[in-house]
Image (cartoon, rainbow, N blue to C red; front, side, top):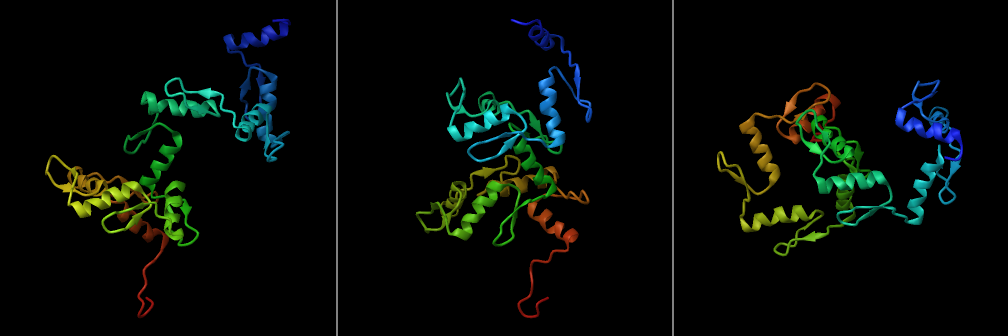
Length: 251
């Protein structure tokens, strides 16, 4: 190091010393510059601005990372498959596909996930929460992906078509399961009772009759159900929703 001060700053990496403290939340930092950036989270100050889209940032490093979206730079590469990424965090998530690591687990059913947002979406299976709503029919979904696929119903966009009856589907998996109605195939079976099903969802529901498991839990009263549809109907007792009406008397 050219200056003794730079050496002292560097040594804090080894000693763990953090002499700079935030007056608001008491979080400590090794360098004053890090403290200054942190304080902007409390003040809301965002002095760094993107020249392309005008989005603002609290520190220059965040701006530099953001600029990769505009210039297409992908500096992080996977050693296994050579796929490249804009952010190191994206590379780290991708690597779990190769290693099989699943660090995020559900406390309710112990199912594990490679990404935090996948766990967050999964938890809605238990709570019944559906925060993404279709603007056309008001149907709600657990994830934005499901909403986007559902939107194809309104736009008439069906990507996968059955060669036998010309029925169309938005999912390839839905087409594949539909084909079983023509072939009579029931590929999903349970070795205990040897009952078989055309769809995985039907098998999962059936397994609950053996295990007694009720994986769908109401977030309001904690009552549990074997089927997601039963949970959805139960939630109407809390919301007061009555979606079905008589065409004759309007009851």
